[in-house]
Image (tube, rainbow, N blue to C red; front, side, top):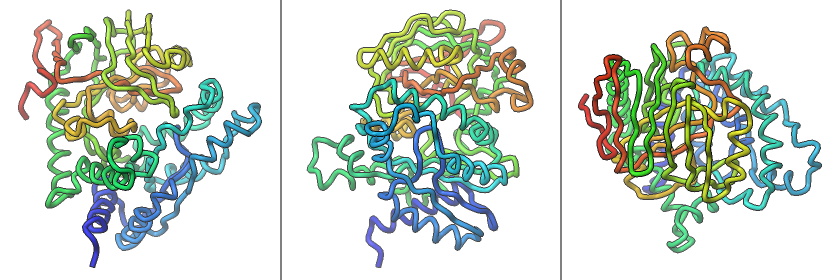
Length: 421
């Protein structure tokens, strides 16, 4: 007889395989692999990984393999490894995921962060490691962004993460509390989680269809501390919820997900904006960021905490000072309603409207995947080696859409949708 927790874990695995990945018979499944933030899957995720592997084989997978990792090894490398070697990265980790991606098989990444792991590490060392890694990952990330495969990112708790999110409850209760929150925001507590996700995806698609038909030329975002206009390129495309791989597999790449998003015009962003949640980059927290944009470019940037790191990030390349994404999330989203800061961008970005500096998604522009870098930028797309989400929404934010004839229409009022679908 399974315990209540074990039953939820089984349901979580089913949602991961049937809604997130939509794993197909005879596909291979790689759990883990190189990414911009993690080297592999935490050993603390092993119970869930084993359930996923069992269910994947029962669904007809021909091979399930796992790339394990240990974040402590990254800390040890920064502390004791030769600094001149930080540009090196194990090629086999990239090759493993590249092989899966090129073959159109399935890839699952499980995020299980320790938010304070790199607190004592010199930020310049982190950037020295991260910059060359981004460049090595570019061919892989291009395949991922073009949906050459069905892929998914989810989260599982660990003790350090539970301690960070719930410091005020007894220590022995924290990791279970975090599991409870993940089950809730991933709709595992619903009577039929798969149907709940199917309905949620349909609703997100309806909102995208509404905005795609409108083809607003500009978005206007206002709140007590934000007054920002974001131009949208011609033939921009809104996305949200499930997507379709090049081989025709419908999958939902992020669990949870509450956002709909599109591509801003890299040269048509003006005004001021302030973050409403902390920003996390490679174990570093950056708080109360303020930006001033002119003609699409950040011309002023400040932060109350870790301003030096923020400046280094936006100076990575020219594209790091421009926007690559604008995303809308209702303030009533399940993540926002928890009132928690999860210290995990996969979750926290789904609590708030957000923008991202850096690389734009090519599939958010009509025929964007077929364009050269030069053509993509000429159409308004942004290229960069980074993509960093910045949460800016609140219950006080309004968003308007401006049509070609200058008609202004409400999209969000006081943090929530102003149109029905």
